[in-house]
Image 1 (cartoon, helix red, strand yellow):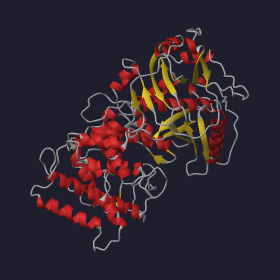
Image 2 (tube, rainbow, N blue to C red):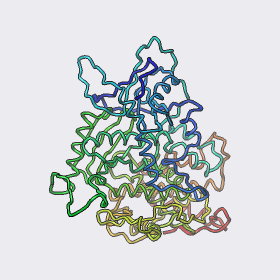
Image 3 (cartoon, rainbow, N blue to C red):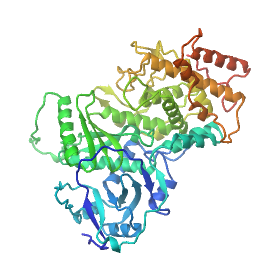
Image 4 (cartoon, rainbow, N blue to C red):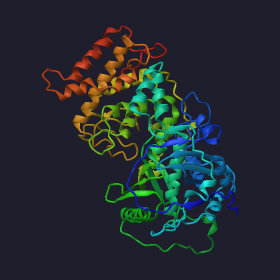
Length: 584
């Protein structure tokens, strides 16, 4: 066992206390020359995936990334530090318990350190010399976690050394800052790449998300040994934006599994268990208990809500130490499989994520999407629309889901609750696209395509990659790729869909106009993508009384068609070839 050492520091576990729900803006702190700084210089997207068909490096499977990240998180601790601390002495103290592989600092209601050891045993060694704090008149719940508080034994003996290290925000850039970055970009392609780099999850933020899941797994593991808490959704599918919520999945499938080779004779041993009428009731009971445990004992877990009567029961809470808003579900394996599918699409071509981030940013700027549930189009629906659009290019940039299923082998076969969730998991076996269209052209054509899409009769289906007759009367129909009888956009109203169409037509018109008279990217005036984020003319007109015979969107559509027809050569790709028509 490592000695306590150094003499200036002592660790206290963070005890469960009730506190108000707050959501801070993170600031990441790390020293130049440290492992964390080196990682940031080699920053990649969430899950360490290098995207783009031009990248010849073998790409990791989704399951491999998840496994590596989970093991990484299990060797990691979260420490609340004094605002003034010697980083050198701090690392020396922790190194007594084993070599440190990686560390970084960030701010969230104080200064925190995320420290990854090289061996998992180092965490147990650190826990063995950590005491439960005395709280005077209050009583501490002695919960043994990997969340610690670092105190100075002799503050007068500690040199006054504030943590003055480079700070990287863990929140997306402000609208003003983003606008400036876009205005100074060299091209529209550069604008889309700039937006992606400024908004995507950083390496450190991704590590913090997996660590938070691992800390919740420690709590759930007290009731269900061998369970796993896995992140899904935006945190892992490569489309996550800084500041997005953290969706977690409590995986209980490994519990009770046995190895056939360990059984012998005619005997078979089974656990004694409680029986309930249905799997849904079992899910509700499990989440109710875990939610209560997080509320009463989970360090930093505040504002716990048990939403058990929803279609997918969940526990919602804030994790103050990380600053994440968290949703914990169980029995939701299809959502994890959807995350893997998006991960694959995002990794196949470097243009996919750039286009998705830009379309989402555009939609958010015009209030087409919202963090509040309602009649708005969701980010997931927008992502499906971008994927569908890229499947419709000539040649296609992304393959259909049916094509990915045909490439699958026996180990890829996956049936969940009767739904076919089979597709190839090995990215390296999927042939890259031969399409060379620029991001600028794709953005323009995306708006034109959906500005003229026959939403009144057709549905969007990425499984087959072609329009189909709508099976229901919902204004917008996007087929769930796995639960094919479901419409993921059933909540969208006709007025919200019309607003999307109007804005898409206006955006296509703006981009076509700038083709004719493009300003130089001097930063003095908005252009390209930056122009699309400005308040809409269509929105302004819709608020006033419409005295004209034709709505604004129809006038813009006619203007767009006249601009296109005036060009003898029509729209061309980067090779000067005429592009495929996107008229529905």
